[in-house]
Length: 295
Image (tube, rainbow, N blue to C red; front, side, top):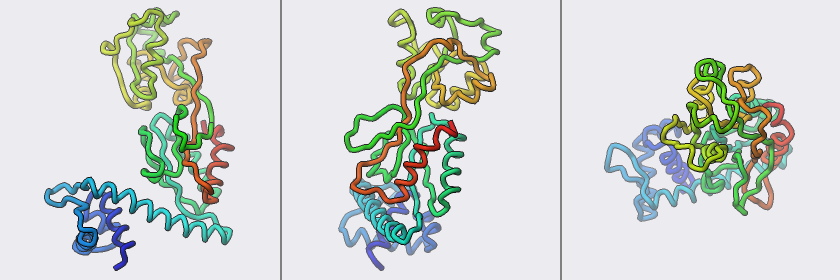
């Protein structure tokens, strides 16, 4: 058995968190998977996975070795893809990370459009609000809102969005419509705790310290926030990118349509490389050209 096969088995075990699940994916018996793992640990003379309890856990050494194994496997896959690309065929997988704050229906439609045009390319999509290490996390591209201060990353601007103050007709009918920012202090607020929108909300108030976040409803999920606004929970700051369809259908109301808060940009992030594989170049160019059709 080759070391490469052992690396693949180890990586699969770590990612699935189970010997049995890894065996199922690799089409092996659990005992065969366990034997491969044990053999790798004996060769390295280090314990990679703690199997002394019911719940499998990766050791500190195992976590470090996992990142290196994953990188090796990916380099081989990229080498194979380049060979195929030299034959004129775009194939392979693109690993993406997208935050929850980007509307998922529009994003999925964008991915469908891309894969319909390039059927040999597959997508591995992770929904995450974290700032992943694009190398350690094995991410090809990450969609993020707001530019990151990281010199190791390219940041391609895709589109702009801005915060808006929203509520519902139901809420206005019951509690009245504020006509100034100052009046918001007397209303029921829903405070988002992602993307520093709570700080933007604080900045809206004329008097420093007038907004006590402990006295208001909060949520860390953009889609939940939008649903709470629709159902009349209160007033909230939300990016117009997320609320676009709800504004057009009048499910939510922009309280101050003439107020222009500072814009922020949606970026496509990727690691600086000497040469991107052709499928990644094609993906980057396609997203830049077509993203505004879906948002």
